[in-house]
Image (cartoon, rainbow, N blue to C red; front, side, top):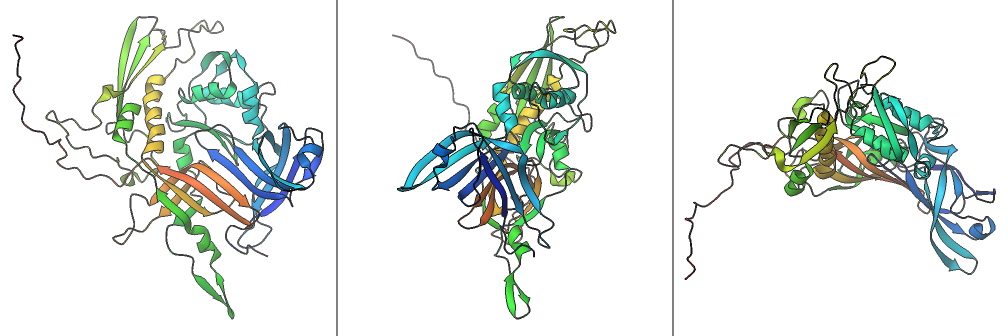
Length: 468
């Protein structure tokens, strides 16, 4: 038998393994489960609310160092044999906090347990003090798989990067170092510096945004009418497929804070690369309009659909546009480059008797990546709530359709979006799964150029005053 209604889910496994070693089946005591993902955060977190009449916390010695086996699945529209699921049965979540707790009657209480993925918790327990020599992507893989560091057993999505690098890591947390590598990595596949490091329910990702953009769109949604009824014999049933596509909530977020975008470096910035060995520096500039199409944006090969959100018309008497002020944000980073082969002069390779390691490439990465992060967080974004499906995850792309008040589509808030944040909510009282998402895109339909020069009065004469 197929799915009965949009948002239906099966809670297949929910077992609490306490610090005392007791396994407690929570299937019949759960009130609600929430799971959180985000492409700019390095672990999955969540909470589970339990209605307890058996003294689980006291009898089971739940101390906030417990484990949670969880499996939730969405039945297929066709048959129950084709399910998608969020499966943490073998690789369990870790309970790290006992949260809100209150009595509802003499022998019953409701309590909340917060959980996270073990890799994220291991990161807080571990520090690295050692050297690495490899490409950045292979170093990330080594850190994640090493039994002495993160020791992950999950599926890894790692995009190869260029350049053999040598690092000495001084007592850093593993994920802090990986995020440092994100700022200094260039893809071997597409030349992009837009690496992100995050975990979702599908695995752990060290990928560029461009590779995520190329993945198949996971869903089609619209901010339209309630799904229609279909005739089926003598009865009428809901069109469940349409109910999955209809947004329960769709709210555009406040966007385009020009002051914030200038200060963050989104509109323009300058990199000062200082060569410590030769005592000289090199300037590299970034401009929003100048560099807008350096790398693929959310629509990929359909570049005609990707346009700046701002107007590039002149704003002053010198013909400047809003992206021409490159000194609004300045980045400074040191580099040591050997003149013979342009290798990293910090580390000598005794095997080859050369400076063969690649130097840092922050001049090519920092401004671009900084701009992209703020572009996804502070330009065109919206909050979307839909009937839940366990296939949805942060880092995926969706298509969204929103009607315009004037008829047709609202082109600004329609089209292809990336899921940047996501929350799964499984409510046992309603037996309903809902997903709340933050979705964003890094381009617009395009602003029309026009006379946007600042209106100003004529210059006033300077008046001088004598001190009598």
